[in-house]
Amino acid sequence: MDRININRSVDLGRCDYFICNDMKYYGKCRGYEVYLWKFNKSHIFQLLDMSDENKNGFKVVAEITLDRSYMGKSWQCSYTRVDSDYQGLGIAMYAYKFIMSFGYVL
Image 1 (cartoon, one colour):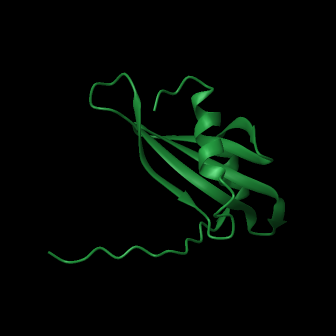
Image 2: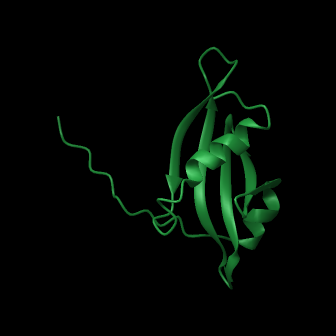
């Protein structure tokens, strides 16, 4: 069995203006705007830093993907990624609390 290598530094890139129009605005969490994108049976939450804007769009701070659990009554977190520039600020914990306030049971 081969060893799994995961990069420690993650660059989530930028969110284009047109992609932001396809997502649903959910609110603000710790000063970052939260958008929801529904794809198949997954719900993808993106936290965007609107203060860091240039011609390529807004900076993606974190991304959380939720899928339905096998029983169908709760959600499971498939993966969570935080940009390396924003790691260590506790963003994932605050984002989970923010998402659960809308009725998502993790």
